[in-house]
Length: 111
Length: 113
Image (cartoon, rainbow over all chains, first blue to last red; front, side, top):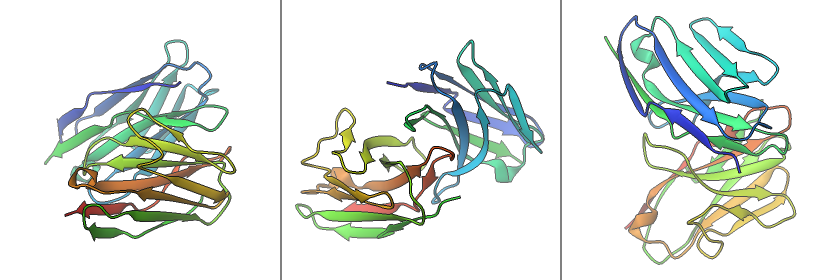
């Protein structure tokens, strides 16, 4: 089955700096890679996603890159703000709609 | 996007009892998943629930302890049976369709005393 690994498990940055979270997946048939943000006490919410036919996608301060050959994808947050502090999860989905999540990254943005 | 209503949102239960958590989706989803999560920690997949077939359980989880129903494409239940304090956690359901990402219920915070 699919295995998704996520690094780092915790990340602390100064406000205004960039944050990068990386994930690798094992099943080359995976074709959809969403990222979720979970604030304390709330459900995970989709923040950005990328499909396997695209190498990069950007939405304001967040971007995701995908390297299909290497089977890894990354989340980039620029100009971080304290409200970006949360737990971030990557995921991989394949044709049968099964979806697996990484273990999560706790991001802390220090003011 | 789909909306998943999960209930109860929280409960405090006596050890040895069972609790059934329900998730209702406002549209049809092909797959539903049940997770357990400690606050701020990773999502631990309990099982995948498909309509019309038995759920597929992950290693460490068994049907007798966590029976799951999926009677149609918009509804699923997870029962936590014969509860002990170690079952205290947040339980989350999610649904996925072919064209969408996973949507989550709001979670059930379970405390077993």
